[in-house]
Length: 138
Image 1 (cartoon, helix red, strand yellow):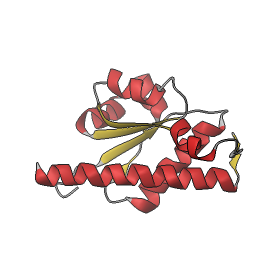
Image 2 (cartoon, rainbow, N blue to C red):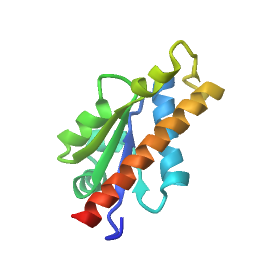
Image 3 (cartoon, rainbow, N blue to C red):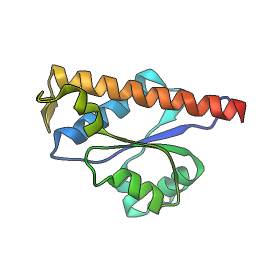
Image 4 (cartoon, one colour):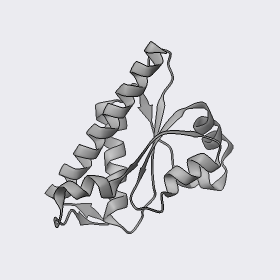
């Protein structure tokens, strides 16, 4: 973002579920490879705990949440902390394009899981680019 504003990409914790792992890996693909200059992430547990730095960052940034299930913990916690969710994504929506496929386990993705994570990461990176265009066009 030209004005230096970063977009926070916040995945659910989703420990113990492959959907959570897909969301976290997609987030890391965005923040480490696809849009590292424009994005960052933070630990959802810090936000849930009320960590002042995490809450301040969420309130000062546009946020994209990546939730593994319909409970939408990342989205709900960003909103409860006073943050703005510019885009809320669900791993389940990304998995719909691969009906019946087994993406791996909670501890490791297989080839299909990595494909889903990459597709989801590309969706997130596209949303980051849209937000950047909106800022420029104001």
